[in-house]
Amino acid sequence: GQQVMQIPQYQHVQEGEDFTTYCNSSTTLSNIQWYKQRPGGHPVFLIQLVKSGEVKKQKRLTFQFGEAKKNSSLHITATQTTDVGTYFCAGPPSGNTGKLIFGQGTTLQVKP
Amino acid sequence: NAGVTQTPKFQVLKTGQSMTLQCAQDMNHEYMSWYRQDPGMGLRLIHYSVGAGITDQGEVPNGYNVSRSTTEDFPLRLLSAAPSQTSVYFCASSYSRQSYGYTFGSGTRLTVV
Image (cartoon, rainbow over all chains, first blue to last red; front, side, top):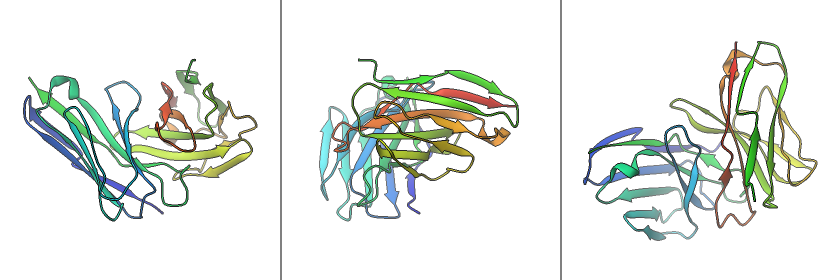
């Protein structure tokens, strides 16, 4: 079945440093979605990318969707303590948009 | 507009007991899903539904049943609880076009002893 892998599992950075998490799917995705989960909370939707090669920005966050629609990345510029949490990528396989499969997540710790 | 409501928030079960986790959404979303979250394992899909009367298995369906008789409700049944089912369970819903992603409930923390 479809697998979505995310690396790294954990990342500790100093406040102000950049951070990147990578996501790879074993199958072509219909779209890629990114979520953030704060400690003790539930996942919150950040963004969706649909087109091959698409790049979207939200303030200090940059999201990319690969040309083959099998990989994606999230880059945070100049991290802040408010960025702490676990970032998940998720995607439904082509032809089955109701089946959203998540990666294992990358937990970001930011030292002030 | 309450979003996705899960009940109960906490539950302790004895091995072999059965129970139903409730999930309701008031956003008229077509898609609904159940996930379990365990440390280091991310969110694993248990069952999902693309509309009333339609359900399908996810990645880890064994030991769980679902039904979707209405658009609003998507209960998850544990048939005979086992310690391996100790986890945090999340229900989530979305429009079929998914432009706004999935909305998650606040979760149910289940412990099976």
